[in-house]
Image (tube, rainbow, N blue to C red; front, top):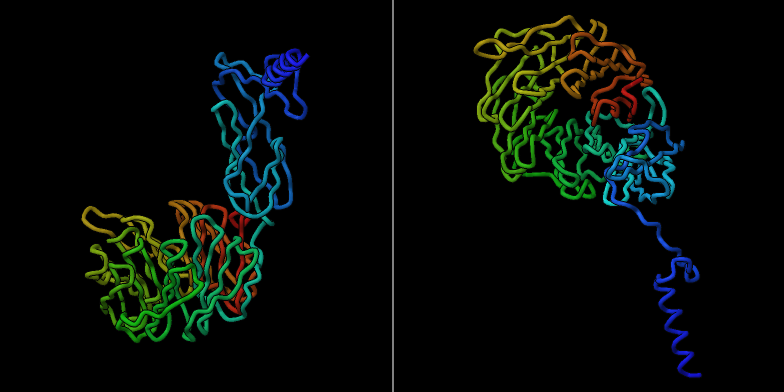
Length: 415
């Protein structure tokens, strides 16, 4: 009897190990057999959803003969769970603004779809947590982490694409007019009284750098990488660092106030300012030259340099200028204006064709170009007062800041 029990027990164990395919051994189902696959196709390949909406994606597997295989279990994954979530059957829910990926995989093959999400169309206001005027804004490439700076040392930060903004302790009472981040953790803010503030922990703490050697008001800052940065301001002041802020040098290539600076790499940059002054460098700011003759006497408030040859500038009374290449140099040319009633204070080109300018025409002004600046069209800003700066992370997602702590945002290119 004892021997018969042992034999029966062994047979039962073998069955549960899979010798008999009809036995599921209680609660452990047998996984379906997946043949060798040649591809997984995800449909649709891209989609745009409003936050809160859902969409069913479909995945299909194909064997090595190109024949569709039914019943294949797929693994679903998302690039950023702050933007979308996905069920085990491929149903996607938009949970926050952004652009991310959806991946379906099986049998060592996978396919990827792109999903963009938005809160609402057009430009709309985000709560900024301040009523102080904001002068500058920047975002990290993910479009989720951003900082804006302004009067009385104001610094506000978002980690969720601007759905909420909170103030950071700036450790200064000076007005801040420029901000630039070189990584998710390291950033610089500049302002009046030669102020240069630095953070190395995403803005949890800010410390004033005492080695800048300047007391004039600083109005803009630009870092091309973690080491190379420039700030410009009153009396034509330019301060430069080549070691991430460990040391600074200063120059005054002009007596005119410089309002904005932009570099296309670590060597080629432009700065613009009052009286229409434009200064340039080809050696990282070790030397600067003044563009002569001047293209305008109106104040230039903003400049953006995308490449060694392409740059755009804007300013008072709708003044608008761009660069063009000549056989032996670059040349600035005055263009048909943004409109004499339009005062431009901020400018950014997202790519060679798409760009935005912001300012004032009695209310907050937003202009957009889709042909490299050949023409500009107004957009409804939903800002009752002037806008001072604009920043886009791609062709769709952008923010602008201005008077009374106003932050307006679009996730559909302003449309």
